[in-house]
Length: 81
Image (cartoon, rainbow, N blue to C red; front, side, top):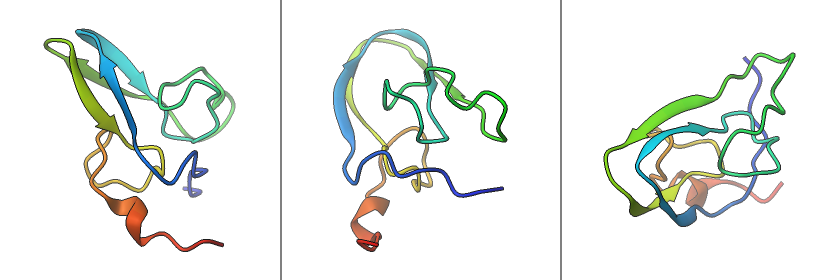
């Protein structure tokens, strides 16, 4: 599988409402960190996740987290190239 595009080198800290959400795994979405279907025709698929209630979360945008869709700080170890 190809590496996803790094959408940003910092998490998106935002209020996410209760319900099911589609997290972008390809990095191409214009609606980061959420999927907008930009992966169509490729090998990536959105990762669905459920929020029991609305709360502020840090969602990964570097696409290297080990705890998707949530940020685990992996962006801190990325090189600048």
